Image (cartoon, rainbow, N blue to C red; front, side, top):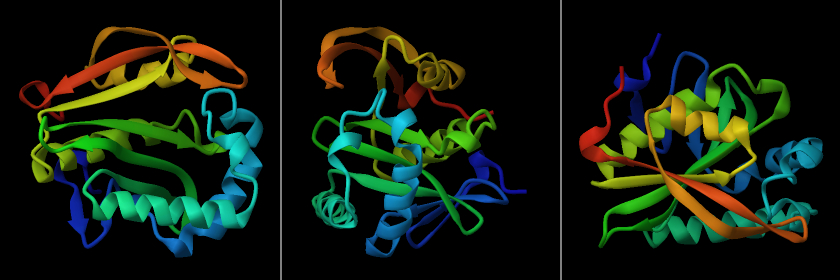
Length: 191
């Protein structure tokens, strides 16, 4: 069994454990990603503002192209979460600021895979990889103040809750408040 604190990085894949891996997003993921969002639209749209704008395969191809451009510009590392050969979600290091050495983590998961520790372990792997390979000093996770499942992830990982961004995101026709959690490199340890 591969442990998150002994994770492997081979090419564009981060191996989280025996069955879960993170693949750098690419065009060949478009069809599966489109289908996954389509099947999870009602559960994802509650907290993710982009879901209602992603309706066609072409939307996903465009999104992947933009993600690849941000990767080339060192502003993002976006991954699909794979359980063996099945795509089950997304995770990434976003808004990378190399000058100030900080970034944000974002994630979502197919509803049927929730509650199994997958996002927690994927976050551990991505955070460890980002601190070691991107030389980041700070990583943030932001989530809706009423999105308790998402808040449980940074809390479980030992992130510090730093405050609330009032009306920080526009979702489903209204502004929502966001909790801001942060981890500094000097505080990070995987046990």
